[in-house]
Image (cartoon, rainbow, N blue to C red; front, side):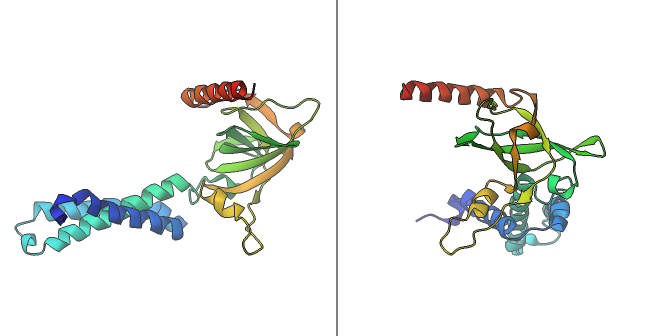
Length: 226
């Protein structure tokens, strides 16, 4: 049987997981902006408790330090999750009325019939002929030209129209919840465009390690099929 002192990191993981779960189920723009400030405040309280440990007789109330540490870890988990989601960021692309978007492919496009689907990271938005940095992910469904199809790959930079829609939820009981699936990947919007509406700005602008791994995988898959 394990004693509490023998598994301290397991005890620390619990409040971290609770903070992550709280961010997934409850988050707001206010908390996104002030969560880091709360972390600093709790950290400051912890430092004061350490400095004044004997003066405050905290050795008689060890639960006070434990509570502060657990609160700090929960806030860290909450803040990291919000930072990863980017949904409440002030420069999230859906908050800006844009004329055009610059996006970067973050995975391999998948062709189904004449529809090419791929996930992108929105990097810039055009407003009144001026581009500004933004964040967020966008799912694109591209209707290809069967005679002159585009060869799109991971890391390509594209200029696309600034129109998009929120992903619709499942309407029937038992139906696959595509919206929840995309939300788990931090994707909340999608757009349907045709090949003539996009402009390839740059090829292979992604992570070189990932690009190499994807090209190698493609070669191995082609060999397997042959």
